Length: 414
Image 1: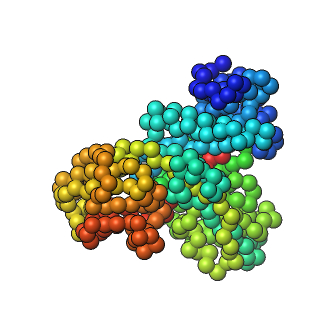
Image 2 (image 1 turned 120 degrees about the horizontal axis):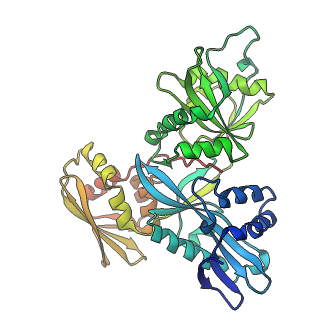
Image 3 (image 1 turned 135 degrees about the horizontal axis):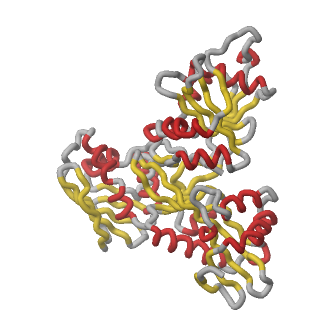
């Protein structure tokens, strides 16, 4: 048995899993979620997943009936925040058997996940799931919705004629192409505030290990790779990047014709809220795809602000408040939290936790997380809620510069 974490009652204990729990976990998730989940659970426990291991499964074990009562996973990932790396735990597969619900078991599991994640030095925990449910564990609706994108109907005219020689073709990928894919993927870092910092190991997982994902190359008439597509099923695209020398308009017909050649006319482009491919599809019938709400929990505001201090400095440097020196006394409503931010010559030098009832900036903690992660603009919050307070216009403008609204997209490799 792995390390004991806590006891819920006489029979229920919470602990980290070991590889010996694989049969029980595969059976548990097949019962409470979907039979196909057993394959994914095996991949994450037997070492094939890039980062997740058995100890990232936190289970509640009933010692009387010898079964899993509840389980959740905290998967270690690295995200890009404006091109700097932050450490993240992504919470997945949060399930309790119906007979065990209402006993505080999942609360115990989530508390242990947060403790272990904090000990690992994670900057935040994220989860995509049921609206409202995760708020009880300290999560804020502050990330982009997962699977955000558009359903598109392809036109019959997009099919290549039999005698037409396409300039660009979609071909199968080899392992030798994975470094190219990983390099090209980094273009996403400048498009979005927050995104998955995927590397070659991640793309190898998508290509060779996880059964529902496929990567294909886009090549020109000289067989040079100029882009890639990632598929989650035959009609869903959740990754598409091109080299600088090629435009999305140029490859549009090749991409759409490739679907038509397989008899597919309706496709789901799960490329996030702001992908440039959408711009060349203005004449196509489109509709928004159903999404899953994205939540984040930032346990240590001071540490997070210092982690992104280089980003804050760059934002100030390109603004009318360059070289700003001064202090901000930030208090969070109803949280008994306060922070003293000290800026010197345009750089955040330190963030101290303080006890203060009133600061020159006052904001609810949920709202602060939303502006830190680009989900809301300062202007939106001040217009929507009178509880956001700035002592003067300089402070309000500084917050607008330091924490702009910007789209994010979290690539899901599962």
